Amino acid sequence: MTQEITTMTLPRPFRQPALEKLGAELVRNADKRFGELLAEHPLPDNRYLKWHLREYILPGLAVYQALRAEGRSQESALGVFDQIVEVVVTPNRRQMSLLGRFPLIYPLLRLVIRSAMRQYPEAGWQTDWIENSREAIRFNMRSCFYFDVLSRHGAPELTASFCRGDDLVYGQMSNHLEWKRTQTIGRGAEYCDFCFARTMKGN
Image (cartoon, rainbow, N blue to C red):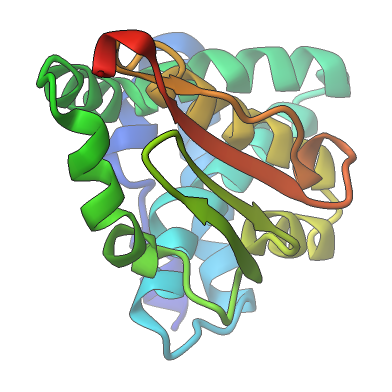
């Protein structure tokens, strides 16, 4: 186990922007912390929860904690982390923008939304489906795996940066649908209210 910890490195989506923005020394500290977090945190059997932990939650937490350990304030560390998240989500942002050019993106989304949401299993997110109509797709999440894990590690404030990642990916995704989420657990609400609404251009 000791060898695994010492050789562990951040996944590339986090490591590359962290190297560019923060330098090699801090990334080495983040690598070490990532290995420690993996050793400390039991990985769930659910493959999607495991994926979220290994690829996003724990790497992000490791970078954030490395920033805090070098003496940055919470506000400063969160600001830098937000910049890193912008780079991390860039591939998804581009992919969604390409799909968003398709005039029938909204009816296609209606067909695939439930299967796509398998990446957010019930073991980590309590999802209440509200609507899947010609006008809007709505669902509320009353629990959040990211918030729960980050809270256990004393960093619930980091959840809002991941929420912002969603806004960057979906906010300007398409002229044919509108991202209308207004609140999230990570930003202090009781639940996250997800909504994709068809726009007039989608008629």
